[in-house]
Image 1 (cartoon, helix red, strand yellow):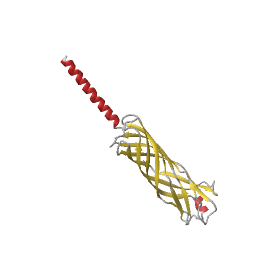
Image 2 (spheres, helix red, strand yellow):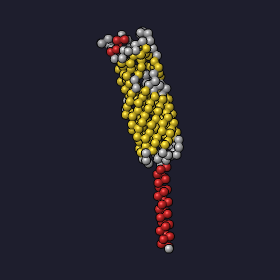
Image 3 (tube, rainbow, N blue to C red):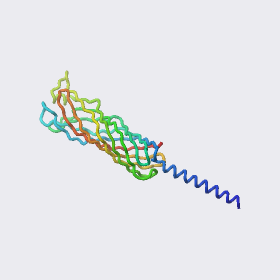
Image 4 (cartoon, rainbow, N blue to C red):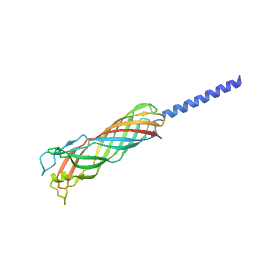
Length: 230
């Protein structure tokens, strides 16, 4: 009888320890001190409102900007069970510029690479070990534009010549970024993450001819990725 009691007590103790270990592991999914690393794709879709090219120029010369999709990812550190710091990462986004307004139909007038360096503070809802955790984020983005190129079409419209073609530069700017997203736990280590961001961003295009064009970009970013918890 004593041996049976000792065996039962040992079994209960082992089961209790195993249950505590399992629950502890589940609670660690997105808890304080966790690192979350993800990889996937992001599309940036500028919501363009274009000003007019300054004089001297044709009346109503404006520009549009294409969407761009790129490989992306990010690193998140859980400051607490609910608050996190997130650093989105991506390869440079290439955007084409095309004529609108009075020059609609002329096609591509330039291109640029956009490198949005962003840091976010997130608030994640629900329990640390929850299956589904929606979150809200607010942060700052430095929108760096690089490798701007003006086409022969733009050069011809602005008085450039083959020997002295028109060149283009785009002003890099800081802007706030707002985010809404959610993560879905596949298991204790892997998860799927999706987010939408919006960055109210205004900038200025400057041509080597001295002409300028102010443009509101307000890009919306849509990201989807798979991640791992460390």
